[in-house]
Length: 591
Image (cartoon, rainbow, N blue to C red; front, side):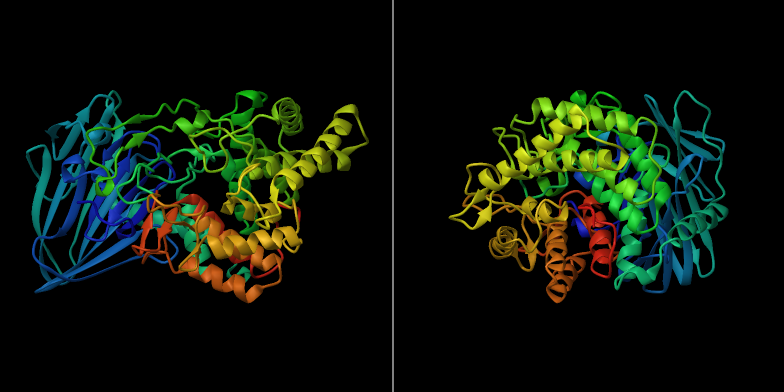
């Protein structure tokens, strides 16, 4: 049976990422890129679907794990009767072969260890051909080749590579697993200890740019920033929403989605977090990826893309995988990419506005792309859509989507006002901006409920409404906004955290949304209720697992993380809120 999500830690190299369980098993890895096929898929199935376990062969009496300080290098300590060992896991960064390195170090006594490496390509389905070439083991199938190099003898049986070995105090045994395309030369050998030192230096040099004095929660921010860096594709600048697919939002349910792609909606959140934390280079790379991806054809834009800007994300189900804790289906690809969500283009223009205010020089063709976007929005703004939660039901006029249309026009007009005088386009956009604002205040407000609603003509409300003051549409102190915030806190709160929408009879047990809980803290802070805001934020921080990672959701009833993991939006929200609660920072609404 699958392990709880919080049992996992993340390691990565800026191309892809792996999840390592508490008991020393790597249960998820897609090679060579985040959005490629998995060769370890036990996370969504069983060990027969691919994993790599290194652990003591005997009974473990005590274990602990941690990241080495300011790195993505994971240490897992195991104590048995008669000895103790440490397994150090990392993925080297840089331009060398894509590799996964595991170093076993004796801490005391003598420990009998076992290693079992079971590669299964195509999401746990295909067993490769394993050959011994010299002192190496090569596993090949189709386009993929993986090479295992280690100083101990390995046996091959039943489609797996096995070893039993003894580690004494002070001894080290290293394993390097490297990837290459099958038609290319095998990956070059890797020296584990120099690779470890280079990887430690990379992460520590990167996070050293963050000033701890910016926040009262420096360790949470540092870990979130390191996690976000691990989710950034180092060549393109794209940030994946999560390195996983189909980790369920509700136990045993069907809310299982593929998040290994880059969402345009996350752009402004990412830009604020990176600029506020001092990472202009990463913010610029993300902005440039965004502009390349949209180009001059906003009418053909998608809400998400592959990390290289590719747009083909056909959704299909992996029927041979039973799912995490038997939650089916397991999905690859995401059909929501085709949805009509006009708010996403508002996020794009807001992102460009945040970048300019944050000190980034405008990119080539930035003004042209902005103009093309607002001209497109002028034609299609009346169309209903799927909304921020990517509903697969009837398209509706979602209030937050309309707000983001207003944001697109507002930021565009502010930029044009700073550059020059009026024009026919500016005059039309100014009139449309005021029309949309009046419409939202009229159609999105329900006087009987004393709240804005999720979509026009509805009595439902959801946590996306918390973003209205955060993007500058209304002040958090406006009586209508204040009433909406309090209704959300009253009716969507569960164990101090915020659900994205109200639970109804028969609903699956979907968890609370950690980003929404951070948005609540941000709203309270804007209202001057600093102590309430801090308490709300610290409730979010309490949901992190033992190595500081957040999922998309937290199931308050089951006391466990839920949804894809680790989730970029949750970590972005933690960074933004932690910095925002401790002083004046760059805000999406122009503050």
